[in-house]
Length: 382
Image 1 (cartoon, rainbow, N blue to C red):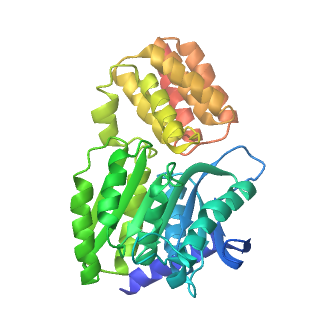
Image 2: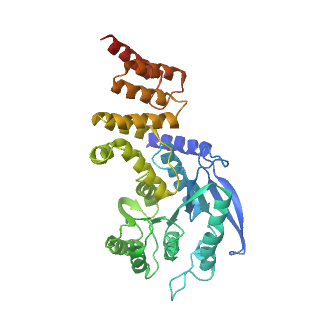
Image 3: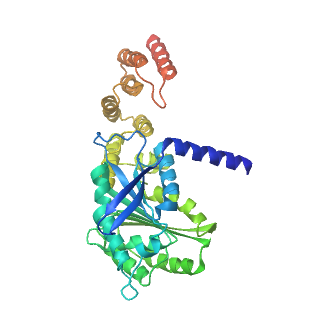
């Protein structure tokens, strides 16, 4: 237990140093006052760059912002998910009014309607004008806010593409309305919901019933995931649900795994290079931003090229790497690999030598380049 607390303290200290939240105040015409925001920008965020980032809106930001921001920062560091712009809305003194819905229609009314309009017409435009946010938007809520966020689904063109509902306190008719709406939604939509064995009983029962409704939906545009955690309560399930939800939402974005390599790349009818290009095009289509080529995926595609003896695909990959990473040892390493496979050992050796003057990458360093040089020289002697 003591070791766990030390690790946790180190993680939180690191998080605080690397990703401290910005505190801003937005003037709201809809709410007739000011609202406090917590904003976390990606590491090395450059406002002048063209890169766009998914926008994550966190309701109940006074307590839910930190666990969401910490999870995103951690997973993005390891390239499992993209960097995101995270915005938390502080509601510690206003949440009952903010999430108010009419007792007859069960839709937002009075202060609840004003808060709905604030998010849609003021908050999101404010963030998109000030920061490099893409139109792939995620909304996160817990309890009352997890119910309220569903109202954004009922617009003709929903404001959000992904919904993370953590132990929602569902309004009457919400399960039926969700089923009807998600069954016909045309845009690719991600929906995650979670409860736990020790969740508030009345909430848990309604959530289980809602899950049964949503599981029956047959719609290729819907990506639905449900978790019913063991040994967790209404509050602790939040810490387990957030990373699971992010995993589901960004499944396509993730680096190529051993499973994807064996089950998708090797049986792929086209070339490994074609698979890589299609994967990155799909990421841009689904998420609305380009993913920078990562070394893990280069290694996987190169391995597939070698396994399939696909020299043409390996050449295309080497040229792509050279174009994307001209100052990295990666460019020399993969061009050298191509010429080596082609049988042109002299040019392969030249490429490997050129790598000594370049910057090391995550997996390719000077020792590996030298090793390839020695192997190539030995092969030229035989």
